[in-house]
Image 1 (spheres, helix red, strand yellow):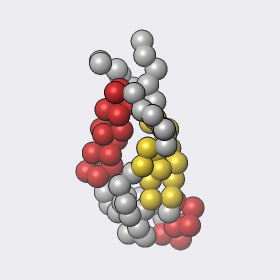
Image 2 (cartoon, rainbow, N blue to C red):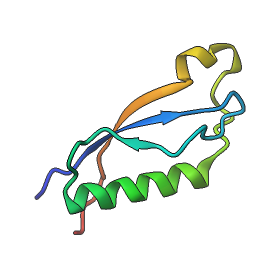
Image 3 (spheres, rainbow, N blue to C red):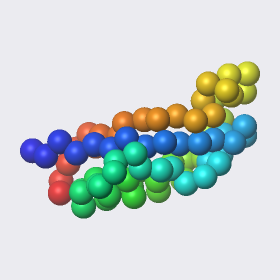
Image 4 (cartoon, helix red, strand yellow):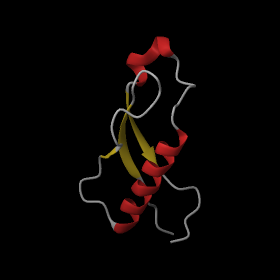
Amino acid sequence: TDKVNIKIRISFNRDGTLASPPRSLVSAPSAKQQALMDSAVDALGRCQPFTMLPQEKYKQWKTMEVYVTPLFTHW
């Protein structure tokens, strides 16, 4: 019943790889938020390079801030 979410900043290189590790924008994450962050960082690392990002729009996707919320929570 917990509603856990995080906001992260992701920076990309032009080739769709991560320019740096994703950064949490939650100032003092709870244990569940930290677990979600760890999972998101792992998933982003495994999924790179993000070749679906259009090269001609690099300035738009160079840095993204996204919210991450699990679909199913079994904490």
